[in-house]
Length: 500
Image (tube, rainbow, N blue to C red; front, side, top):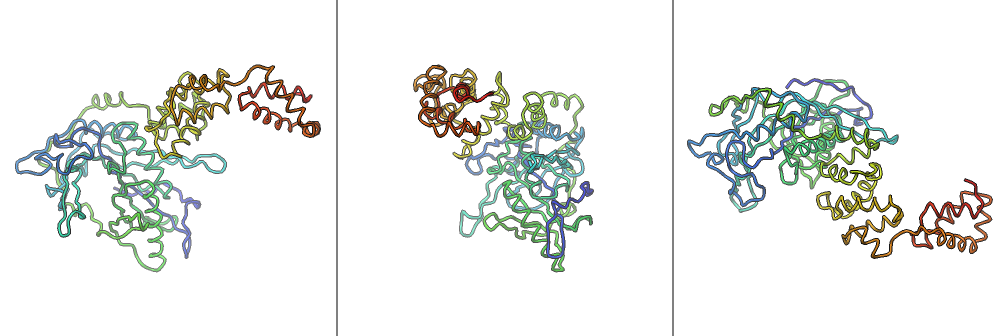
């Protein structure tokens, strides 16, 4: 691809070196496994975790005379992803043979796409922030292309003292290789890009984004330069399978390259691996160029062609994507950009929130989901799919607050009970006597007792009316948090002669 610099150098992203400032340039090639029941060119299963070499057809094993047949669902998934990336959909594309010889690629070549991919240029908007002023910075990252290709198998070198084993379960699995432009200028931007891309494909249902299972992994291209100069020589860090590792790999590689250049050396274009245990990259092999792969059109596959009606039918069924959902949450529910960003970060979180917010105040629902639910899940190491509190249960707690059946403080206690023990919130309140006291006579008796027992504090309130909050707290404590806070506050002010 032609490298075009679309970013103005930003001093806040410069990396200080011994001889001056440097700028890191990052581009990424993300391999996303297509969500489909069968492989790209065969009917073999794609189910994860099956015994070695059990998901292998004659095509995957490259038996003589076996011919590939395109999986239409994989094509649809690639087009859906392209539409989600606001990209150009190419109605005619070609499959090519990419020749390289690895033991886990039985054919001796990979069926991929080279000059004519299924998806052309698109874009992703990432948000960095919030900063100290609570502001977000939106940055547009260009997508160069998306093409379909088949995955290779897996070599295992730790099963035998003198031999390597090969598992072909992944051989032939459909991948979307999503290639960004070199538009990222920091490890934070790269992590935000990967996070956003994973969110988009999960919303679309085209890839599960499970990096720990290898169904989404990134080749990270890193180079450095003096601000404003031409692009430097890049190194490619292969198969990084964690967003955190992406950030660490970029930070280390940028520093490594800066050190070489400041010592008067030059950067060799090469492929490197990231070692998460040592937090460093190491050389793997010299970087191949396109001519090294000897691409040529696959003679067993016809050009892939479809019309506008095919594209429009897929576009009509696309779900609401993260950016659109965030905008709607801000516009219709009055959420802050930060809260909306948190809620749309994962489709499962957004779905949970919408179930809680249905027919209720959006800001209240957002506060409970973000602060209480997600906070509790984070403490226990669970994700939203593993939540012990259902949307119906959390919604019931919010309803009890609105009905003034319980106070905000009691609601926190009730949430913990539901979180740890389960049950119907309304039934728990009834069974455990957790209803808040709204009887003004009972509240007035508690207020009188607290005032009578604390004459010194009464004198202080006369000089400083804000000290009335102390009495409110004492009454709430005396009533076990069950007194209606508004009623307590009104009675305290009336008894102490504080004007509203």
